[in-house]
Image (cartoon, rainbow, N blue to C red; front, top):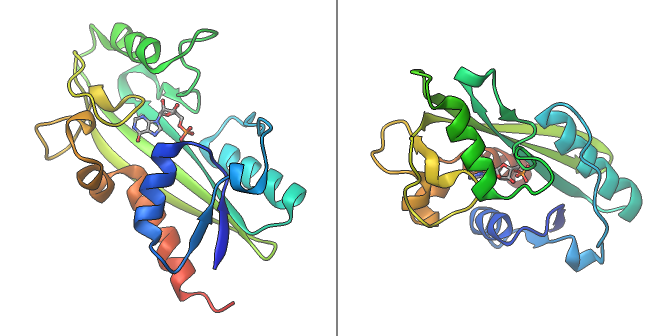
Length: 193
Ligand code: IMP
């Protein structure tokens, strides 16, 4: 079965293709010649995931799913949250986003945080949401070089290493996106088309 994952992010495509296996042929946005910036203007993670999936479904008439993720840090009122990608403003990149989080939580004792991913699936005009959450803590200095985004400062509960010190296989097993995509996969594998 062919289905479009509304992303061109190579890390995410790799993670999701590894989990969804050979029963599904996962196309990226590039594969359907979608090169425009898809709007992500909602103020919730769910809203953004749905907005992206609806955009692709309506314009390209293909079954598809989209995801949106945020890092939610308790001591700073859930920031960066839905603004995780653009947290440090105009010149945002992972380096500056991480610096901003570390600066803001510097004097806070509560370092608890979680990643949340929502997958929005549109299949034959019906919409479905799947959520994945992983709890952990923010460490005060970057550790590790693997992964992307906030991985070097996020230590999942029960582990002494950050996401950036894990292999992609280790991370997939416990990560927000891994949990969310396995729910999506279970649903897709059971559905009768
Ligand atoms: P997106 O909605 O999946 O594009 O994620 C928004 C932002 O959250 C990204 O730009 C990253 O900075 C961050 N992010 C998403 N997933 C991860 C992850 O697995 N590890 C670390 N950071 C992530």
